Image 1 (cartoon, helix red, strand yellow):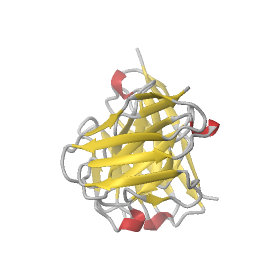
Image 2 (image 1 turned 60 degrees about the vertical axis):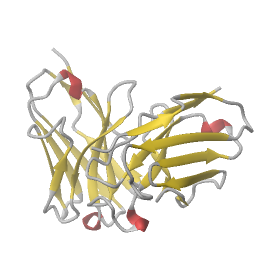
Image 3 (image 1 turned 30 degrees about the horizontal axis):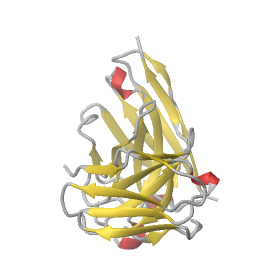
Image 4 (image 1 turned 180 degrees about the vertical axis):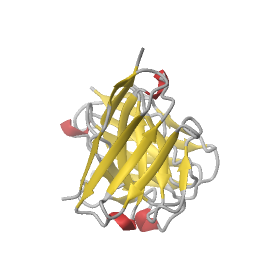
Length: 106
Length: 125
């Protein structure tokens, strides 16, 4: 099974900061990665798919990159509503596994 | 606006059964693979199961294989999760989500783009 790791697991940041989260896969997964944001008590929301494609309606301050085994989610200028937990997910195999998450907080 | 609404959660004892439902509206349900994803209290997301758009194939996480059954009724735009032999470790919020039927799909559908609000299943003696 493909394993995903995320770093850091926790990130302390301020409004206006540039934030980068890394997701690493245990084997090559091409660009079959999606990123989700989850606010407390809410369902996950899709941000990025196919590693770098911004989902319709998602602000352009979110960006994704990478291929193979290493992927990044970048928030160019953190906004108050961006304080949340972020998950990567692989869609390369039937486990559709998620990473352990990165919590972005003050 | 697309809506997915789960129901059927509750408190049950270990070993008992429960069936979750997810009613979908304003989505071409029969064109989408459908998934269940769960989240234990304070933990991350765990993928549980997928059923193909036509209901002809299912796949499960090892943690639920042999105990859970995913099914769908395309005419009623409803997804189900039959959960048997429930364990304490199955306690979680269960989300239904629309996504691809298979891994490595066409790029434009390689995503879980619609999610329900979730329903809480609590397994406790």
